[in-house]
Image (cartoon, rainbow, N blue to C red; front, side):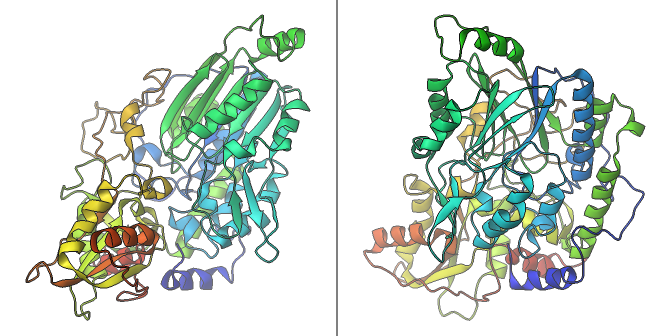
Length: 607
C-alpha cells in the first residue's frame, strides 16, 4: 500500500538515512513492550539425514507480533536461531537447509510504508542465510515491487532465488526473461546433492512487467527435462509459493516421478497461510509453515543416505526393486525466543544471541520509530476478530467495517443519492486488538490500495440484490483466492486461524494453532487450546439506505479491485451497462486509508 498521505512522511525520513547503516544502539534484545511468553513444555526435534527450516508468507512482519505472546520474536531472533541451528547441524554432521517460499510484501507497515515497498525490510531479509528462496504472488501485483525484486533482491542470492514459471517483462520491448533462476543444483556441507525448483501457483493477478506460466505448461519446456536429466541429486526440493495440496505441486511431482520414480522429494509450499503437512508417497512429503512470522517449520527426512546408496546400486529408474520408505518428521515452531533458545542451544540463553541478530533487533526498533509506524492514530475500544467470532458479531472486524468504518469514512454526503458500499472480505487481513491503533496496524488490517468507484443512480430494487448475488456467484468470484486465504481448506484440516488474547489461569494453555495433518495432531511444538473458526462471505456491505420505494435511485459504491464482477452482476440484474465513475467522495480515501481516517476521527487519542 502506497498512498500519498503515508508515503510523504516515509520518503522524508528515508532521504537522509542509509538502509545498511544503523546509527542506533540498544541493550534490549526484544522489541519494546512485548508480552512475556509463558513457560513452554517442549520436546527435542527429531533430526534426519536431511533437514529443513522453513518460512513462508512473512508479509513484512519482521518485528514479530508485538501483542501476541506466542509469536513475539523478531527477525533478529530468527537470525540467531538459524545460525545456532546451523552450528548444531554441523556438530551432528547433518545437512540443514533454510528455505523461504515467498510473499515478503503486503501486510505490515515495516515493509509497506516505504516507496518502493520493502526498501527497509528486504535488505534485512537478505541477512538471513537462506539456501533456497521462491517468489510469491505479492511480489508481482505492483510493477515497482516486481522491478525492485528483480534488480535489488534476486541478484543477492546468487542463483538460489527460484522462479521456475515466472518471468520479468521489459515493457519497452516486450521481451521476457526468467525473474529468478529456473532451478538450482548444489551440495550441502555434508554432501547432500540437492536439485531445487520454485514454482508459483497459476496466478493471474500480476502486473504488466511480469508473466506467469501455468505449471502444467512450464514443465513441458526443455529446461525442465534438462534439469532432471543432467544432474545426479540425492534429494529434490520442490519449493514454491503454492498450497501443498494444490494441483500445481501434484503436476510437478508427477513429472518428476517419470524421471525419478522413488528419489526423496521434499515439498516446501505456502500461500494458504496454514500449518499443514502432506504425504504424497513413500518418498515424498511436503510442509506448509503458516504465515506472518508466526510459525517456523522444521522438516526432517530419515533414510536419504540409504536411498542414495540404493540408487547408486540400482540407478534412478529401476522399479523392479524398490527402496525402503523414508521417515518424515515435522514440527511447527511458535516464533518466540523461548522456543528458539530451547531448540538451538538447549535452553542456555547466554549462548543464543549473535551479534548480527542483536543488531537486527535493535534496528527493527529504530526503523519502526523512524518510519512512524508505531505511533498511535487512535485507541481501539475492544478486540475485533477476523475469524474467531461469527462475522455478524459485534466483535467481528466485518461488522466494524460495514457498520462503522465504511459509512463514516467513505460515504460522500454531497452526492444526491444515498450510498450502498461493498467491499471484498479479502481486503481485510488481520485482527485489531484493544489498545493503541497504529499505522502498522493499518497495514496489517488492510494493506491494499483499492480506490472507491461507483455507479450513479442505480435503481434500489436492483442495487439491493447485488451483495447477495456477489456472495452467491461462486463460479465468477475468484477474488477469495487472489487476496484471501480463508476457505474450507482450513476447516477440513482442523486448523485455527486467528489467535485472540483471552484471560486464562496459569495452568491453562495459550489459545492458538491446533493442527491436524497427514502425520496426525502432534505437529504443534507448543500445545495450544483450540479456538473457534468462522468463515466469512466473500463480500461485505453497508446497510441498504432507506428509500421511498423500489424505484428510488442510489449510488452503488465498490472498490476498483472488484469492478469487473460488480459490472457483470449489475448488467445481469438491469440489462444496462452503467458507467463506472472512478472517483467517489474523497479521492484520498482508499480501502487502507479509511482506517487512518476512522481511527483519527472516531478512536481519537491514546489509550
